[in-house]
Length: 378
Image (cartoon, rainbow, N blue to C red):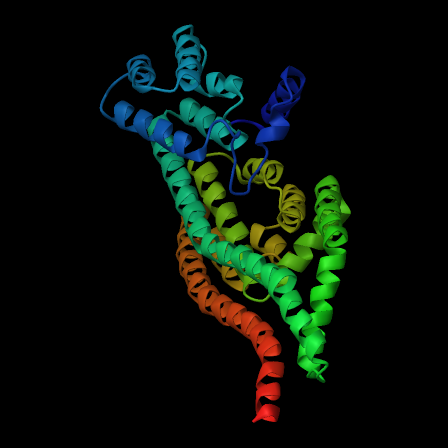
């Protein structure tokens, strides 16, 4: 028996009165949990429960084993509390919700699994869900860690050259009274500008960061920043694939739990923080409640590409939306893995060339006058 929409709304009002943790877990991006309880811990927890329950153990025995395996005192205390509540007759979904460490996706998936008798399958789906998320996170970290490190090193090197090396050369050139090339003059002017205005420039950057942080939740900023992000060359396509993949991954998980499509869209909308997807889901949810098909509503939302629209249309016609969501999730995940890998392969040589040119221009500008003076003496 699936949850009714009214039951979900009543539960939402109840939990809002209980505590404020809901605002911290409604994050559909990469990190869906609180900082103290990572996606890796969720993957391990759901995976162990699935294996133990599939082996024929009851919930009580399975949770006893999970509690006994914990080395972290805080995690052990949390799991012990969950175990005690389950022993007292409270459902696993409610016990996990009370911890404040699990998001709405986890809660409703497990709750529906309990009501339909498919809890083991739901736990398996949740394990796969977080396994894929962790894999994507690691891939993104792997791709961007090297470029960020290179950029920081390049900034330090250029700053050192402009504020230490160039002034030394400038003293030599001033004593020679020789006419300097235009490139050398520009580099010396840049050196003087950075040394005189570095403090102002630093404060300006900090002010921009603080300003963006303060308005990051405002609708105008979210709309403009997301629009710019989607229009970025190459990066925009990756962002679009990423938000679509996460959407279909969650929809596949929720529909597999036999939750209705309108309820699934409502839950995903409450979890997502990416503005275009949030507005698209709001429209889709409203359209479906008024009798419109899902693919027709998706076609009016620019965040979705033609492949997603076409496959969802087929899924609705043959009544296989759950399978289509799973297929789209796998396709976008594979394409994302390839695109992110390609991005890493492209960024490394581009950054090396850029930094080499930047440092080379400064060195040539400093040594060019010396070459000219040497040719005059000769």
